[in-house]
Image 1 (cartoon, rainbow, N blue to C red):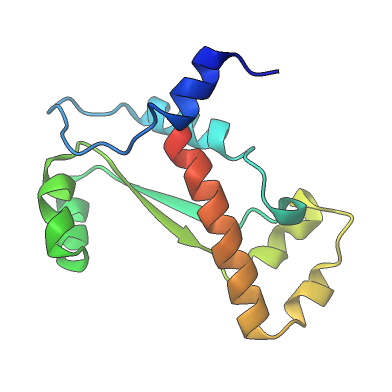
Image 2: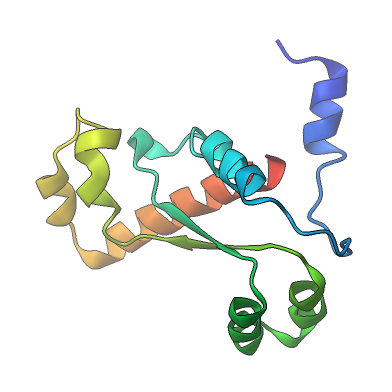
Length: 132
């Protein structure tokens, strides 16, 4: 059962941030964030989301070339940026993540269906990532 304070923190107070300090984010905190978020639900525990943490100036410069103009100031000033993506070959990990599923039957699905599953579940996991 969820308390009103918890519900408020998740649904009313949770936001992505637009302004940052110049303090670096420790690698162990980023690892803890990922290790906590990886337990977020996805359909049949397929877990297609992948995260790349960008923390170096060189990596940030490369990322700035790819982001939209509206995001450039945020990416430039953030001490760490999480790039969220999905793995189109997520089914290769089902033996570990979802041993009750047949990875070969997933691989045999058409690409559009795999892309939809990967995308939808990554959106779901990405929402949990924001909350973490």
